[in-house]
Image (cartoon, rainbow, N blue to C red):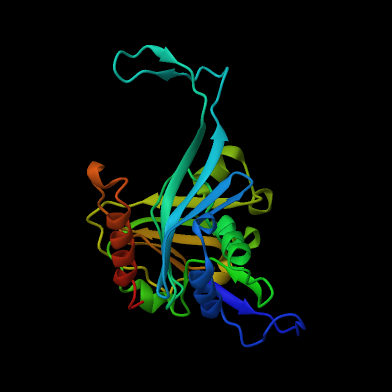
Length: 264
């Protein structure tokens, strides 16, 4: 998470106030109702908070779907039952207040975490007056070739070419079949999935950034965007069925996952 401090003078806000001091003030004064925030259909809970971290859950709620061939059944005898409550799809997050790094337990059914989390931090801890912008972004790298050398085996490569820099021989078969010229193609992409035992590294001497509108590489441990200079770390967290709702265990595993990328 990146905090960009405001450069405008605010007559109603102490300019010495920091994000940490806001958190400390919250810790001293909160009551149980402050541990839950509902914004539209986004719900944030704070399970634990101190000067070093914020740990909690994030979810989306929706009305139980009716009339769309969705219904409830009793677990014992499988008889049909009504669905009358709200449904929440949720996950866990852990924010390290020293590094501002965030670990989120992936839930593929949650489309967006970044935007709701920015709003949650800004409004819940009342920091909008001291920060122009709060950004939740993957790790940024100023030296992709060097950082890429730390990765494990390649899994896939996805590229999209800038229109006026399409290679002459990359799409020969398609162009010949359809009788196309380069200037007939609006965009072109290539997606290559590699064998798990593929060990070769990219030759960055041949990579010309201006040729591509997209160039992404997947490894076992990272997703790397060479155009944007962004590295997204993928940490495997084993959670057993017994631990699915064990807040303390989830908290520990997310904290440990941040330690695994601390040296980046």
